[in-house]
Image (cartoon, rainbow, N blue to C red; front, side):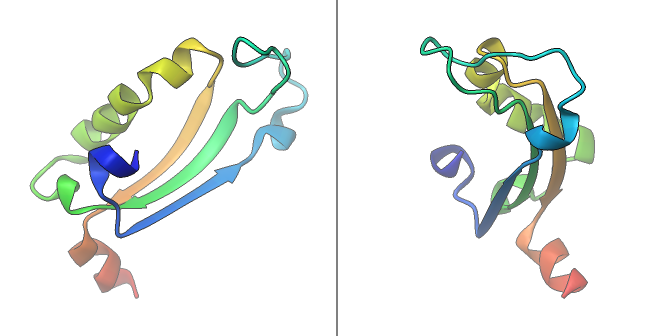
Length: 88
């Protein structure tokens, strides 16, 4: 994600424990990890002039391999630096 988006801010929170009632999904070839649900806050100039839907698509595309190995859900907050500054 850092190569693709050159983020000014990137926060990733593992919320998998909040979804313990879901059927377990094992991630990766080592079959030992169970991280499947994440909240991501990403501030990047790469989002300038891009709609909210397309920003989400960009992130999903960048994480395509992760979805193939068990990533199940993302809660996304995607902003430009200007949008982020306006919230401060």
